[in-house]
Amino acid sequence: MSPRTPGADLPEHPDRLWRSPEPKRSYDVVIVGGGGHGLATAHYLARNHGITDVAVLERGWLAGGNMARNTTIIRSNYLWDASAGIYEHALKLWEGLEDELDYPLLFSQRGVLNLAHSLQDVRDSVRRVEANRLNGVDAQWLDPDEVKRVCPIVNTSPDTRYPVLGATYQPRAGIAKHDHVAWGLARSADEAGIDLIQNCEVTGIDVSDGRVTGVRTSLGPIAAGKVALCAAGHSSVLAAMAGFELPLQSHPLQALVSELLEPVHPTVVMSNAVHVYVSQAHKGELVMGAGIDTYNSYTQRGAFHIIERQMAAALELFPVFARAHVLRTWGGIVDVTPDASAIVGLTPVDQLYLNCGWGTGGFKATPGVGWVYAHTIAHDEPHPLARPFSLDRFTTGALVDEHGAAAVAH
Image 1 (cartoon, rainbow, N blue to C red):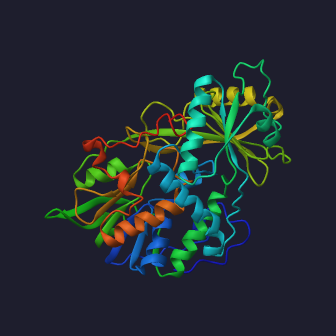
Image 2 (cartoon, one colour; image 1 turned 120 degrees about the vertical axis):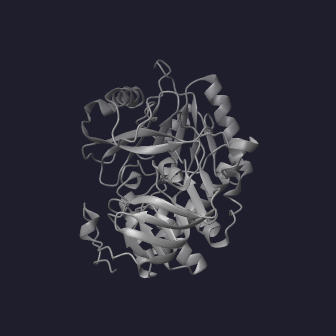
């Protein structure tokens, strides 16, 4: 399969760019899920391990799931050592990914502010700053005047309902254009000889004597030496096909954008207490997101009251946004684990691997998890950065509990 020459702006419907090959009868590795993580895993299987007899199977169009529905924020300022390790690894890869892929990702390190609105917020935030520094992650504590200098449009008046008492600041954080990231990774995998197969839904996973032997798909059966699950929002469904259960719940996650505006918002601002996070895209839209919808669902849409609360929170922090208009809203599906951290590694089925449960953190982890997941698949053992995220932590009790530590309310 050969992609047509991509232009500066990629088409809205990727099948116009990619022509899917007919799948072969067998592959060394089959990756289930053609989103950011699946494409990054394919890229690093080829680049780091020389493994190219690989098929990436996507039931829709490449990167048309959560990769097309995220808010593009990239950061690594997580509290726990395990989380900081994998996200900082990802951020370092982000910093060189445009050169690595020879593709414009519009990676913009404009920094991220995590606001504190109460004394407990301040204590938790300062603790996280110190933990970040111990892990080699750039982090600062800013007082309200310093917050105002970084982002002049934030309302730091002490008379507001949620006064800004300060914020953590990670200068190296930022955003990237998610469709460009997907097509940069896809182009690299394609050039390595990896098959990217669209409109190919996995309907079953074949297991014999405790070992995976292949997958059944809407395009017919495919034998595989190894199978890597990488489908956000549907991991528990795929695991059930292989005969085991996962500690996951699937929830809708919504976001929205405004109409195009002149540059007004210079950084990324997140507020856990109010709850909203806001950045401004390269073209000018304000991009806003909030927490997950609390009900379980596989629908790629959410409830209006989530958007309503999100907009109210945004206006608390940014009164100037009262003049903006919502252009469109959308929703994806996220898998959430009991400790709000990912699962990456081996499964009870030999040669079947798992990458899921990223909640709201999937996009920022893209190159990092692609790197460690490819290592895990190639060597049949977890990469050191992936070991804390093994499935067996839910039986040993060694949880990576980012529920209240990640500066996002899951």
